[in-house]
Structures are given as structure tokens and as C-alpha cells.
Length: 159
Length: 159
Image (cartoon, rainbow over all chains, first blue to last red; front, side, top):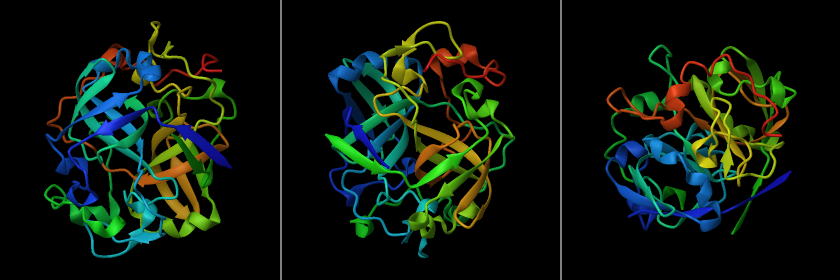
């Protein structure tokens, strides 16, 4: 079953090359960018400015053919693709939670951007925290990588 | 720009009709379901079982043409589409964070399912909490709807 989507906007960021990219939003704290929503879709932005954070869904436009195992940035062992956020996926959809500073004339001014310049936008959703403190979260192989993510930059491995 | 994706699996749940659906995961606590990943994509599941929660990305296969404003389930006023999680969107991509109980032969056994039976799967990502306690989150029009979500069921308004 083939599913066809359409670009509804474009994401602008300081990251021109994949080599300079932070690998997770925690490494992108404070980095500013914008989301230009195409005119036809702007009426849907009403009420969004009440949210401090939004979820961006976008197309990893520079991804390559996926492999079932990848060596993530925070690890030295190959891991199952779906246990990572690697951009080379069967359906290369990226999601990022970013801080929303303001919206002006169809442009979202955002912060904590970990997205490449020129990335096609697919959807915007309001961010609502998933869980309270009572839920215990396990994050598999990422547990041991905690704390080393913030300072790391992307490299060429997903070219 | 058109973007083409392909179905990589199918989500099974007790929700046959949209009328019975919980409107958010908080209303789906404990509801069990499965995700059947198609054989070609199963090697990518390795290491995923170390995560207690996963993010499912899926295609809202029964969505209709989007309108720029919708009246959400938790409100009586029309809100901008992108400030809601309504399924009728320009690109009808849904995301849910579900609890992962186990993986057996390419099938994920999941809990807290708020997804329709037969929904096409697009992607699986490991869930990692976005923010610590230090970040203040504002959720716009949803603030006043807090607490009334859990018990609410879906209805016909997105048919």
C-alpha cells in the first residue's frame, strides 16, 4: 500500500550540512529556526500560539536507503533501526519537539531546532506531555548513553 | 512536492469504529493491542525490546478532507487544525506513545492503544522523555480541558 503526502511548508535552520547537526534536541538547546507554512495551510495555525512547544513532523529529504541495523551516534554497537532515531528509515519521517516563541504571518519562530535547513514540513501538532512522574520509563541501549548526547554532533554515517 | 511512503505493518486494536475510540492515550490506559510488522522490516526491530515505551507513526486511513478549523472533542469552540490532534489533516499522520510489553516474531504486544483496528503502520521510534521537570509547558486551549479527557469517547465529528 502506497501512501502519498504533500509538503505543507519548509523548515529553516542554521544547519546546512548533516555534519554540523546536533543529534538530538538536547544538543540543540537555544538554536533558533523558523517554520514557513505555505499560505493554503495558514488558517489551520489559529490557537497554536497558546502552546509553548509543538511537534514538527517532517520528511528527511536527504536520507538514503535504510539498513536494518545502524551504529547510532551515541553507541559503538549496531542497533536495530527502529530502536534508533536514524534518518535512513523505510519511511523517512522525522519528529521533533521544539519550543514555540511566536507566530507571525504564517511563520513559526522556534527554538531548540535539530533539523536540517530546507526540510519539508508534513504536519504540526500541539505538544502535550505524555506522562506524569508516576510512569517508569526504560530507554534500552540509550540508558548508558545518557549525558553524553548534549555535546555530540552528527557526522557522515547516515550519508 | 509529493512524498510517497509505504505501509510497513498493521496495527490491531479493539476499536473497530471511530465512535468507540478513546480520544487520547490517557483514555486508553490498559487497552491492549498488537503491531504486526511486515517480514521485510523485522530485522530492524532488534534492541527495541529494551524500551518500555515506543512511538508509533501511522496513517489515519479513515480520515476525510481536512478543514482549517475543527471543534475538538474536549472543547465547544472551533480551533485551528494544527492546534488539535484531529485525524483529518493535510497529511493524516498519527503519532501515539504506547507501552511495549514484549516482541515476539515480528509482533509488538502493546498497551494504552488509542488507534483504530487495521491502521497502516509507517514507523516505530524509541520513546525517550523530552523534558525534565525544569521546563514549563503551556498547552493553550487544552489547559481548561485537563482532567475531562480520560473518560471521553470519540464520536462522529471527524467522519
